[in-house]
Amino acid sequence: MDRIFTPGEARELLPAIIEEAGALVAARADMTEIAHDRRTSGSSALGGIPELKALEARIEDIMSGWAGRGLEIKGIAPVLLDFPAVLDGVSVRLCWIEGETALGWYHRTDLGFAGRRPLA
Image 1 (tube, one colour):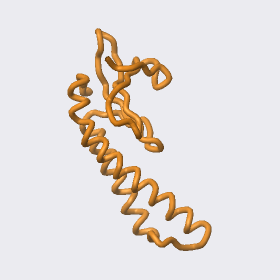
Image 2: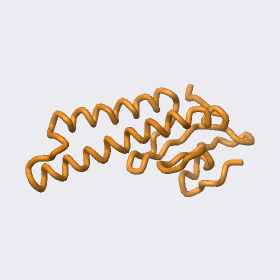
Image 3: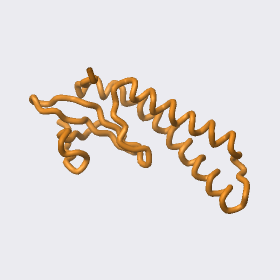
């Protein structure tokens, strides 16, 4: 059975999620820079294949942790996460996107991101 979050439970997890998202964003940026530098000049000051593999593993570890806690990963560029929930008997997703400092949005499960509304 999939986990269902209350807004309070999701908000309790958010500080750790934001910290982990920061690590993912840093790894994502490093991967992008290494790949670009290797393509354009043949090498990168940030490293090569071993460093790319380590960064990929770090991102996968973070994402596995989120999935293991019941979050739905909708994207990593930007990081977009949904917490399955039920509000007023309706299946919704409490929605957080990279850059937000609080959990303040939700959308009906069947509507997706375009249906975001402020969370009371």
